[in-house]
Amino acid sequence: MADGITVHHGVRDVRLDAKGDASRVVVWSPGGRARAVTVILAVGFGLEAAPLSMERRYWEGDDFDAPRVDGVSRKWLVSGCGDGALTDLFRLCLREFRHDRMLEEFTSDPRTAGIRAEIRRWGSLVPNRADRPQERVLRPYAR
Image 1 (tube, rainbow, N blue to C red):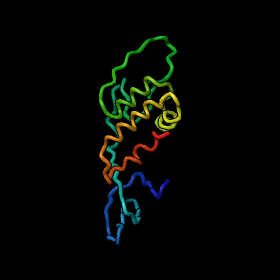
Image 2: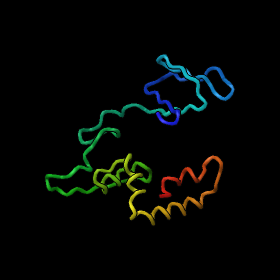
Image 3: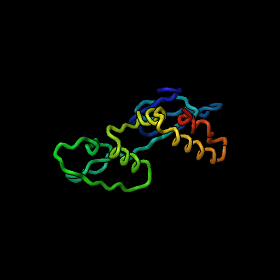
Image 4: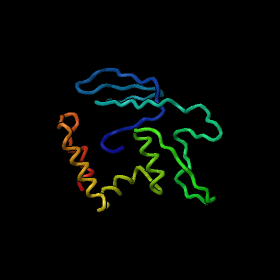
């Protein structure tokens, strides 16, 4: 992966062993070992219980942003205030919405210049703390 980041999937029994000057030895099953300065444990909770027939699991694909060929109008309720609710809203409102293309399309469209300026203004109101530099947070919107 980029920037010296290595991702290991499906590991278990992670532990930190010998401490070095600025790094630690990380050991995991099955048979993994590496020296690292930073370790991020992105713990998942496994697959949800089998859904009812009309439900889908969170990570399964769905078709609610697909074109409708039956002519039936659908109504949707998006509940929540986090990134999942925003993603669902984007998928309902934007044809072929893709996370990986959103930032590039948003920042390259001249029609969003005013919105980008407002985001930068909001960012300038955030205290400039060493652990959260504004430059890095706002750089993608600077176009």
